[in-house]
Image 1 (cartoon, helix red, strand yellow):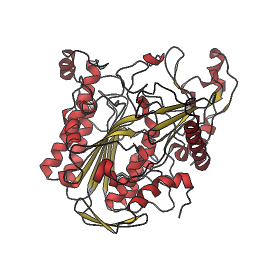
Image 2: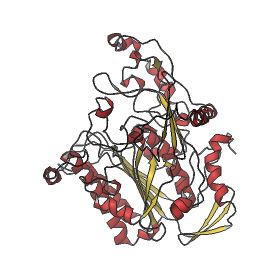
Image 3: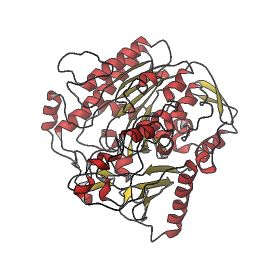
Image 4: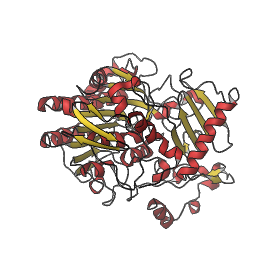
Length: 507
C-alpha cells in the first residue's frame, strides 16, 4: 500500500468518510457495495466519453453566459445533466492539465508543469531559474486508460495528446487500444499514425468521424473514449460557412471574433453528433459524457497590462490562459448521464482535473492501481446529489514553478503557487514572496486582495500550501541573477540535450 501524508490523503479521506457509513447504495440502477476505499460493483459497466476542448474559456458557451457564441448541443448537455460552476484545470495551459487528467496526479508527481522546455521564454531576464519541465508523461505513470482496460474496457483516443508522440509515449502505448493524434493545424493536418482524408477536411470533423465510428464498432462492450479537440486553439481557422454566419452578429461582452465563434460551433457540432450516435444506438442511459476544457480562454490580458493577443474574454473572471487567476484555470465542466445524473442540475462545489480518474474508476467498479497515488477524489456523491451531497471542503492546489511570456516584454505569469479552500483562494508569487488573498464567492473577479486585511486567513492558507509542497516534494525555482535581454538569448545558455533527456525520464 502506498504511503500518503495527511494533507495529500485528506482529499480522498473526505469523500470516503462521507459515504463510509453506507453499506450499499443504488447508483443509477447499479448496486455499489462500499467499504473503506474499495467499491465492489455489480452490473453492467457504463461507457465513458470524455470530450476535451482546447483553450475554451469559462464564458465561451451559451450555458455559461455567452450571448455571441452558439453552442446548442453543449447547452443541451448541461440541460440534461449537471453543470459545475467551479470546475478547475490542473494547470494554466495545456500539458499539465492533460498529464493530470490521464495520470490522476498533481504536477509535482509527473514533473509536467507547462508546455515545452523552460527555454520557450527568456527566463534569464528574471530573478529565478524555472524548474525543468518534463515534456512527456513518465512511463511509470499508470494512465486512466490502463486502469480501465484492466476492468474490461476497450479504449480509444482521437485528437490532441501532447504527452509524447514517440512510440513509447504515444497513447497507443499508454493503454489506448485505438489512438490517432493530431494538433497544430485545423486544415491540412498531420496525424500520428498517418491517416488519409479528403482534401479540405476540418480536423474537428475528422476526429468526430473517428469517434462515431468507434462508438458504432464497440456499442456491445464497455468503452472509454477520449475526444480531444485541437479546437479552439490557434491558428484560428474555421469553416467558411460558419464564419459567414457569425460575421452578421454584433459583438457582445467581449465576444466578437467570427472565426473563433465558428471554431466553437464546430466543437459544438461534434458534441451533437456524438450525442446523436449514442441515441441512435440506445446507449444514452448507459453512457456518461463529460465535456470540459484544458485551460482558460486566450483573453482578458489587456486589462492587466499584458500584451497577450486576446481572442475572447473570460470576464467576469480575471486574466486568461497562462495565469493562475480564475480566467486561466476555471473552465466549463459538464457531466451528462440521462436517468442517473439529475437533469438541469448546477453544482457549486469546486472540482479539479485530478478528480476524473477516481470518479471513473468508481463508476467502472475498478480498483485503483496498486502502490499508485491518486491525488483526486471521486465525484460520485456530487453527481448523485449536487450541492446537497455530503462532500466536506478540501483544499485544491496548483504549482507553477516557471514563466509564461507574452508580447512586448510582458508576462502572463511568473513562478506562482495557489490554493483554494472553500470560498477562499491564495496565490503566492515566488519572485518576491508576496501573497494575494481573494474571497471568490464575493469577488469572482479577484479585484480585492484581502491579504493585509485578513492576515490570519492568508497565513492559514499559506501554511497549508507550504505543507503540501513539502509533502509532495514540489521542486521550487532557484535564485538567478537577471541578465540583459540580449545575453539571455544566447544559445550557449541552453541546457544540454542529455540533461533534458534525463529530466524527461525522471518520475
